[in-house]
Image 1 (tube, rainbow over the protein chains, first blue to last red):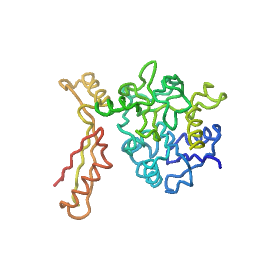
Image 2: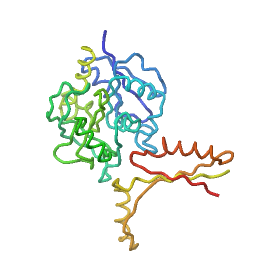
Image 3: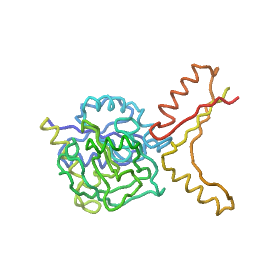
Image 4: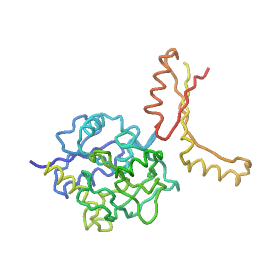
Length: 226
Length: 81
């Protein structure tokens, strides 16, 4: 049986097509999911893609978090279904309290779009097993609200439990506390990050790097061997 | 119809670069003596029916779960007469 990975489209999602494509390039079957449809169509995992769902009205991710599809995703994620939130998807995961902390406007107030070097800090999550701990990767970063914040106790807890999954290297692009680019939940099935691995999966596209492909091959292996 | 106002502000310990940008612009515009600016959101809710304890409890719940993200923001609910 093929592994089915869903990608949600909200009004204002931008990167759903790239995420679907990345799923296919990795060898899984991409399944488009619609924000108003509670049914996850038997997917084994879900990707919440980047963009500006609901125009970032109120706060980034705040309205999407209450959409019908998210009801099922929140329930399933708590039961262990793998979920990856990229950029706006990461913002939705924090608004849904599946991941701790919150995302705020970049500290310099500018939209940022560039290739970003990251260090993979945790290579044991469902979405990072194809990397090695400490590995440096480069993927595009493009956002307005990328500043990760949480209180000191939460940050200490994340560090102690190895739940900082990715850290920015060569300069902090948005004022994120402790250079955090992405985190995981305690179980390792829910991962969120601001940079965009789905834009770095094919040598012909962008700067030609394929450093992002590991996210999608990791989850595929995890699901096939599960 | 009664109006209930919900003011949402970033928590004091959270950096507010938008407020800082406003504060930095003030001297240039001739407004002196402002030591700090914090920028927030104000929601004006026109309530159908009486604003009793039950209605206020619902608005409080609305503010806590939706209008504000209490990880980063504080809110105040006020009834306007």
